[in-house]
Length: 230
Length: 328
Image 1 (cartoon, rainbow over the protein chains, first blue to last red):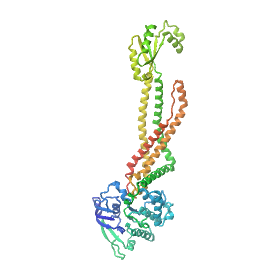
Image 2: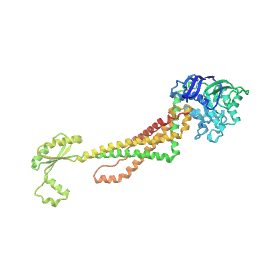
Image 3: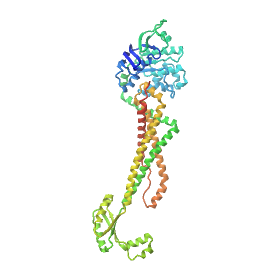
Image 4: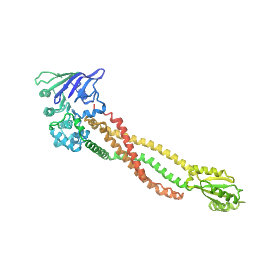
């Protein structure tokens, strides 16, 4: 579903964010992306989102090669990718419902369908009763779950998450991870950038580690072996 | 939701393409209605700021519109008075009455002439005595200084400035004619003045239209800054450029329409306020001049122009500022 072939990204002559990165995520796979801050995690996610273009190599999402994608095609690619942000990027000038409805409005879903699908997404993250509230009235964990509902409301085949548990306590983080796991079980390809090593080990899933732009691919061992020394 | 739908297809694009176009069009239309309504409500949520913008646009539009309306009224006047144009032919003092009558006959048969009136020099003197109030003084004159006069009325189709010029040249060339006078001089001056005023109005209109576009553009720029987060999120969830621009273009249209309505009200109030004195003034000049307010047609054009300017201003702002907002 997501494939990187010898991808490099250089910002200017002395700063190389990614060096010759290769990996393949299959449909329904859930993987973690980890590394120091500044190791290139955000850059890698931005390449998938088409917020950046690679300097060299090929990025393929859902069978489409993104390198040659013209600018006006970008919105249509993004509709197939759900994104969850650390700072959740919710809009405080509208209700929870309207926040979650945005991806559907963008694609021109009829308003009757919007109500049904937004409520299904909110139900999934356990916030159905709060649809009329302003996101500002919600706790941090609830806000993050609204962000997740918005990311999955149009059933994207790919779900990206950038430090989704960054501001949450361990119990809430585990809840959120459990949600992501459920999505991958129904075929969504999930890539989560995180440096919560303890949580990642607990999940025991595939782990992509970035170190100064180089990618190491491996399984996160539930044992105490040190793969990543921060 | 991905989790609760068993028949989820990984490629949403394919499924969307199979939606009937009718449904796509309906939801597109519904979205336009929603955005139009939302952007309108947004303006009313900040009534003072919106009202000020509407007033600025309204005043800027009312000025050139008022000048154009005034010009329209002036052209009505000159058209009315051209109909009354007559050519006065003063004959040489030596011309006798019989020769004058002969000339009257000849002129009456000329092309472009509908009638010729003969005014005897004595009759002219009597009229002058009456009109000028110089009665006593005129008695001191040894003899009548006035010549016989012919009043030539052009035919209906021959009252343009050129046709009358030709007629005058023609008559001026005849023997026994001392001087030909057309009371069109002032009319021509009025026409030139009206033309000047008209061009000035268009220059003013162009400059003020540019001002309206800039005012709206700047207002929209601020609106874009205020809604930056929303724009970023819309782009991240796959909003096209058209989708992101739409609310701002509608905002521009609402600003334009509101400004147009303000301009219309300003014009109607001014016309009503001025109409009393103007009618009295016109009556003193025995003119049929009256200041007409905007016609239905004029109102429609005013509103359309206002909306177009609003849209244009918004479009420029959106082109310049919105496309620069990309998620980072």
